[in-house]
Amino acid sequence: MRVGWIYDQAYSLALSGKYRESLARFDEVLRLEPTYVHAWNQKGLCYYFLKDYTLAIKSFKKASALCPTYVESLINAGCTLQRLDLFDDALQSFDDAEAIQPGLYETHNNRAVSLIALGDFTGALTCLDHCILAGGLKPSIYCLRGLCLVVLERISEGVQDLEIALRLDPLNRHAVMLQRAFYAYTSM
Picture 1 (cartoon, rainbow, N blue to C red):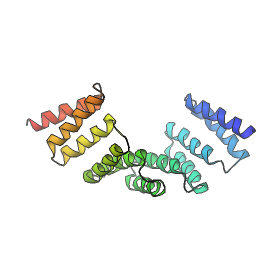
Picture 2 (cartoon, rainbow, N blue to C red):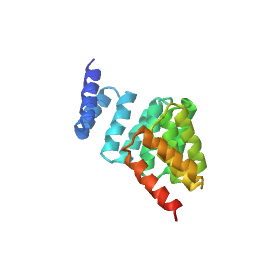
Picture 3 (cartoon, rainbow, N blue to C red):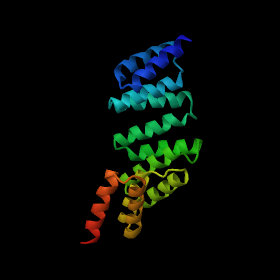
Picture 4 (tube, rainbow, N blue to C red):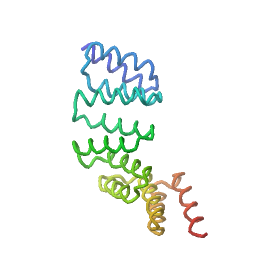
């Protein structure tokens, strides 16, 4: 019971942005129960928000080693690897998550970001289409799709996706900026 109480304290501290205090409490949890997978994952998130990506990855990998089917730690590791510009490694992490639990919005969305960074806009489009099928009617998905489509010289489709993004959220600054850039690009 004591471990659960300390974990709840650590989690509450993390939610309120007190990451260093939270880490101390998660360390206490892990001293008492070193195989507490969720504590390792949450510890990784604290390091992530403190921008200590190396320790974040180490914590996520520990969570994954303890529970190889824990998809959340794989996705978190992938997002952290993106911060380090290790996009191929991030893709592997997302692929591992997809193999365990296919069709997750988070996996496809983050996979698309890595593919865009690597210049694979066609692959990114496929991932973004999966996001939409998974119920991802989010402006950010349509902004990314619009970007991919324009880069692939499918301009009118790209502009259409930005218009969808703006219908979903008329104040979405990314959609507004991309739309202006696309119109300027197409009028050249």
